[in-house]
Image (cartoon, rainbow, N blue to C red; front, side, top):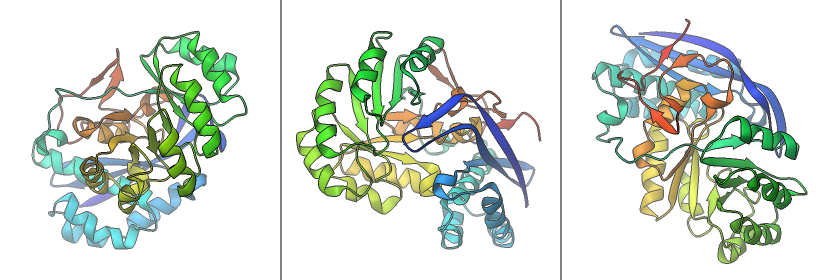
Length: 338
């Protein structure tokens, strides 16, 4: 067994702004696990907001090399249970490793990962395309440059409803609104009334992650469905969200990969929650992993490859308002350069 690491700096097509910061580049780490003539690729982005660096992810995964070599013939789920006690402080690193092992597992078994799970692609959701906070003029420009039937609008300003009203003049697309925890319960209740009239489908994480009292009030009074993001990080959070949210948005990097992500999806569905998986502006490597889960999802935010200039891999691609799967095993990923 061999481990390799490929750090990249993904250049965004537009400055990406949400309620707690802006960026023009997204550092990311590709993990390659090779065994028996097959190589699996995984990815996790680095983010200072969560205290995650490329160097720390690489060091933490590298420290597991003897354990991985000894157990490489086990399933990804079995290896996850062995590595999680030593990586739970760094779920981003766990995610990159877990995705790489799933890709390797699919390639060994000569099947795309979704098929290995007994899933099919007959009825899968389309990703939204994210419009970050900007001047109204630039937000309109982004919509006009990328016509799409479904947009996620990042909000958290003093003029959120006015922004959506202006954007609505330029497209008939469905909007999803992500306030990134910027509102109070009373603001969210009032904003929801106006936004519903503007063909907004749901509100994502309107309140601070720990504002459960506010969410209880909002859940009772909101005229729009509510989707948890920052309030639903790990597996134990899913049950907490029931009765406070109508759905959950799972991030593989935050929960530790496909292994716990899949369990969170099934748990959410068992509680009657709508289920979404979101991205952290990953390249096609990470997006192709998310795509394997599409048959299980109600909504998906996997537009990372659409938001960057210098994608680093071939794999599952989104264009022509469809998701296109390559005829390859595992997650379907091939790096352009190694």
